[in-house]
Image 1 (cartoon, rainbow over the protein chains, first blue to last red):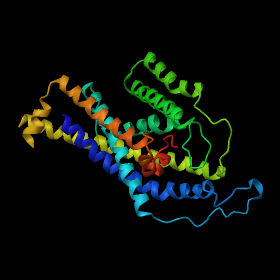
Image 2 (tube, rainbow over the protein chains, first blue to last red; image 1 turned 180 degrees about the vertical axis):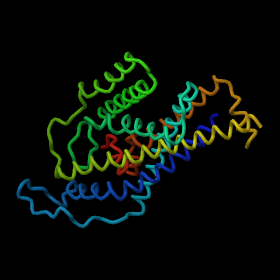
Image 3 (cartoon, rainbow over the protein chains, first blue to last red; image 1 turned 90 degrees about the vertical axis):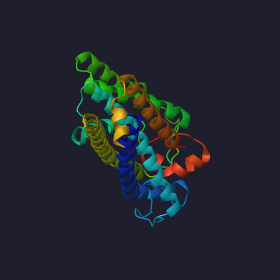
Image 4 (cartoon, each protein chain N blue to C red; image 1 turned 135 degrees about the vertical axis):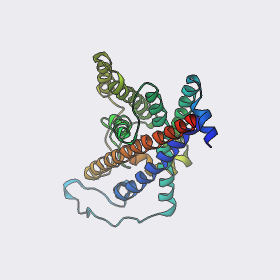
Length: 233
Length: 58
């Protein structure tokens, strides 16, 4: 059981993580590098009187920096995949059908729990924007992700209005309480870059999670089929 | 390989739940280390990814 869970998760996580990394490098990294020109002071933003080009020359592919990004994206998605496959296996013991198609819905639920729920108030940050203390934000981030993940499970498997009601409360409460925010805004980065960054981070996150769910469902159902065959043979 | 799979499939429900919890905990550990630990080397190596995945960074 342990080996089969781990194998499915590693296949799904590596595949989705690699695709996520390539999408990030192409769509998110240029926005991040552009922001760093402002963060480091190479470009300065003068409000309505700025004469900076919106398309400056950006550093190209950096083998070490971007290589590390690919490795860490694959690691993070493998971590996600292990939790996801474990939950899929648990749901399966309770009668849920797990395959590549149902996996897509798991992927969307994962995106909502890990990206959309915390990002709804603590938007994906481009480097150089003002933010509250990182430790406090991490606590809020974890609490929100755990609440949203439980809410997703209750929506899918709760089966009655009491469970769905709890799910709605769990989804909304972190945002009613509010996330840690900076006392003052000091970021030197233009809002256009910050907005594009958040949109791109969301978009890539959603694509990657839908694939992660599909892959996880596929690899887990395949492992289950192999195990069942071996048992009946 | 088949023998191993068969053993896995015949595991009691208790060990199945144990395996699920173990795998989920390993996954949480990996994501925590790669995405959230603030040690300088880790932070620098994972910097771009942390921003791109919407984790609190810095």
